Each structure stands twice: as C-alpha cells, then as structure tokens.
Image 1 (cartoon, rainbow, N blue to C red):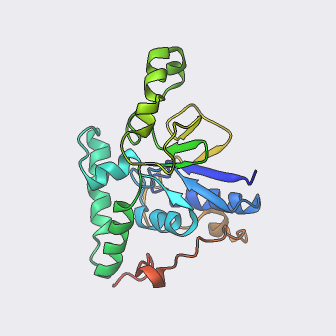
Image 2: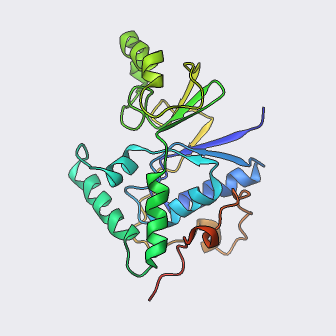
Length: 228
C-alpha cells in the first residue's frame, strides 16, 4: 500500500507546518491528506492555507474553518477573537481582491468528510464531522461509540464517494496515532517570524513534497504579493 501522510490541526503555525512538510518529503511520501483546522490560534493563516492548497491531495473542514465560514458560537472568547482576526487577515486589502476571493472560495469548497475505499476521513466524528470530540475514555462508552460509527451517522451530512458504511475512520479528534501528524502551535508571538527553524539558522532545508499541480498563477492566489 502506498504510504500517506495524514496531517491536521495546523492552526496557522507556519514554522511547524513547514517542518512537517519537509519531514514528509524526506520520507519520500507524496500523498498528503489534511483533516482540517488549518487556521485558528496561530499567526499565519494565509500562508498555511496556501501550503495545504498546494501540497495536500485534499483538505477537510475542521471546527475552526466552520467558525470562520459560519459562526464561532461554541468557541471560548479567546478562540473566537482569533477567528475574527483571521477573517481580517484573509480580507487584507494589501492583497488583490482576486487573491482574497480565491482563499474564500477554497475555504468554501472544503468538504467535511471524504471516503476513500474503506476509510472515512474527517476532522471529528462520523456523527458530527467537524465538531464532536472522540476521547480515549469514550472507548468504554459502547453506546456512544456505536452511535457515532453507525451506518446512519457515517452517511449523514455531505455525501461520500461510496454508499456503504466505512470500516475505518481517520479523525484528528482521536487518541494520538503514529499514522498522523499534528502541527500544534508553538505559539509564535508575531506574524513577522515566518521562516522555519532550518531556514532561520541558515541550514539548507530539504525540498518540499511534490505539489498537487495547483499554482498561484492559475488561481490568482499568492501570499507574497501584498500591495505595500
């Protein structure tokens, strides 16, 4: 079976995301599935969205993308404030209107789940693909686990590529797994520090994974050509 890198919860942490992408490239993995929460908390939402757009085979919606697109009703005040700030970054008038629109279109097109073969990929649970936490202790709650993985739950919401209930679910809101990578923020204090550690120290960085073929020239999307 061809190896796949599963990433999630990048949370606008550009330095961590670049490091993970370089590690993926060093391992020779070319397929990348992103399970959502590219934005939120961190200082570089535009840059991280640009990288998932370029390198990930697909990116799913997480609860932070939901909050940005719809309403951050269930977020704590700090997280909701960051969502509002992220919205201003994507609407930044220093960038061409077409670039900002391209980012919003990308976000709006994100699916909440994707099924490939017998595996259902999502951010949270089959019952609530972008919002429901599945914690280690839930393994003892047979009623809950049965409910969230039932045929009805798995097929609810956005249609998947197959009609049958999946045998396996890949979710970013599960107990830690060695098959996935999460770019949890190291809390960069400023968006001006946009280089990875290897670049900042002058050590040559390994190549990124092959891109999916999408380019800023075809989408009108660039994170580096802001009007000053």
